[in-house]
Length: 266
Length: 276
Image (spheres, chains in turn red, green):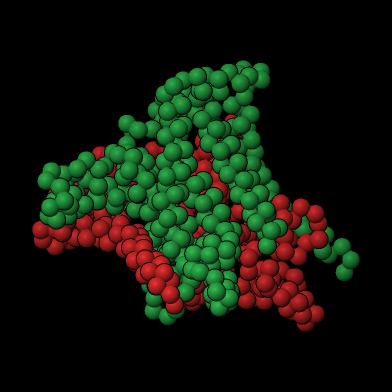
């Protein structure tokens, strides 16, 4: 190794470690701020306390927002997994033209401005007379979750040996059963990572949801931004810490079952 | 078994028709609406938008912030991806956790954390003052620099991971082979590592830029209403001003920018793929 090599490598290490610290900074700050005893954000906290976690009980509408967000995330992810499985099989195994275009189209909502999709859906639902906020939100959240599922399923099905499905059919299983009992278990890692990231994307979405809510159906991110405007005390850091805990659980499940390296390949 | 491959194509129908009706059609109708006034074709809304100097300043700010965010993210991400691609064992896990955990934590949480950091009496100013770098607190929240730092932080994993993925696939013996043939480190980087990593750089930049151009939560929390971006202007014209014609025009402009980024990046990816 020459001197220039070593210098370049050392510099890269400094930036890489700085990058790790930079990425973790918001998470650490939020956790620290949530355990403060003070009524304002002072770091490090003058004294540690759980008072802001206890104060969450008195936050009106918080529980409703959490359950609505969880409900939307679970239902939309499950629907996306079903629609995504069928579409990914069609793209991988079909022989029709335009399969590449279909693959691009189904993943494209990831690259579209969320706010614009939200505006478009708001006007469209109004046009067709759909007034139910829950149904509107659910339809919107399927648009959010489907591309995450499609991306991982398309990648993993491209490498899947479909002769296993054919073998199962020769042994007497119907096509749907063969898919459920052979393909799905074999692609479990893809289902898990695609499903988890889809779930998290739905939980976090603000730009689409904001156009589809009404006074009674407010998702957690919408509620959090509302609290931030009305009463920005450290209880918001406590809610955020709850969401960080959720992310940590996802990370542990993901790394235990499929490994971190596979999670990021989605 | 003839025709089964064709019939398998039918499995795409539920998902495709869902996206066609609940995603493509609404976007198309939005575009259509932006070039219509009372059912007649008209680009008057666009002319009105582009002849207003305030709107132009918002457009320019949005593009500038997205470009600087992408640039900052790339500067941090590229060396990180190089180190990550060479890392093994413990260090690889550290880097992977540092990417996946922030990606799993929502934008709302992270943007909120940056407002705590950037507060005038916040952690950053306290640190700077105790280090003696500054005497009085600096105003950071509500500045464009703060916005770029916060946005780069949120989008960084989307820049690192595509570059990491291509570098990881690269045969590590290539730079070594070049070195054994007497290539200098700079020559090696410019002629081996950099060209091979370009597809990852293009993918990362395209993704980061399209996220940054349309971000909404991050600017509303970090810079607030005083410095609007295109997304904030869209939301405001729909939710507060009730000026739907303006909102439809701005969101169409955002949509067209996003589509051009996608097309440009896939064109660049094809060019790079053809060259190699």
